[in-house]
Length: 127
Image (cartoon, rainbow, N blue to C red; front, side, top):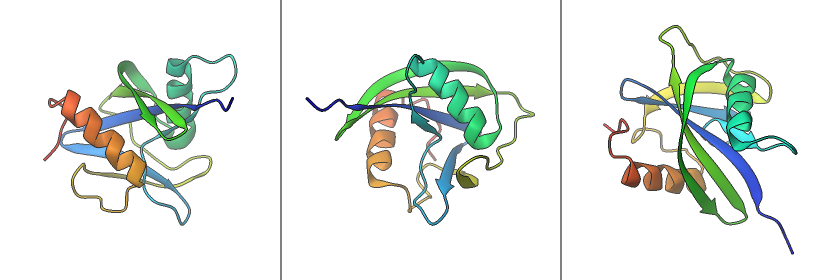
């Protein structure tokens, strides 16, 4: 039996903008990645955020479990300090703050994840 890929996905908001990341020559996505063996979803979210953007969240709030194909996303919202600035690290080529509805080149499955999160959490910045 094939196991689902376990992923931690992090939503970072500043004002009305969400943080997107991308690898070289790839679509934009949300920060996050694979949950390593022996790691909790929250530990993976802390690690992935730091590895990909250099940022450290003051707090993480679990929002939901989202299934997409062969992946299960543990979706968190990061609370960031005002001093935190995103910069590409590791395999990430670029970071960009953008309104959630203004970035057209987001991976399709991530667009669907965002729609699901926004449906359940209308208080998240949208426009």
